[in-house]
Image 1 (cartoon, one colour):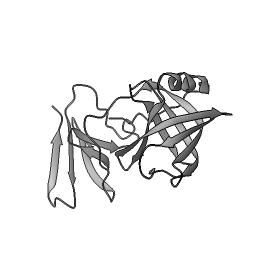
Image 2: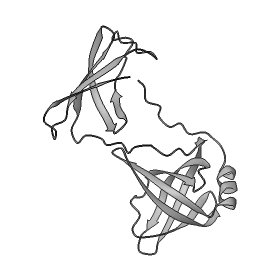
Image 3: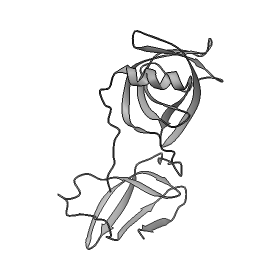
Image 4: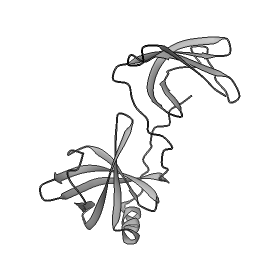
Length: 180
């Protein structure tokens, strides 16, 4: 069980500009507590490494200096960018520090939700057990935040049975999940 954080690659904005030549409309993605907020943007211009966009509808759910993700509607390469300027009244957005993520967009099969409060879980694999925290959960499973598994005696491998026990305050009873 591991988390693969996104890693940015040092590719120039020329990759970004080539995607823009094929697709004038991009999708902005902003993750928040396990949920993905998306909105379509229309590309206007590129000046000195800054991309200018028109906001397609309503208010944009982001703020200056925040990092967001962009990808074309065809799901080509994903980019990370920093919000430099946002004007919801005029419907304008300026992005900079645009970096390639080095991968294509893949839609999630289920939305993930993060608990409001830290939720302790018991993780069991073979004859070892350790206490850790629930990072997020979905209809398909759970994400755990577990540090130094091997140092703590837990080495889950493909094919090993894994069991996770936890309690959600809203449900009020103990839940138990097993791998299959």
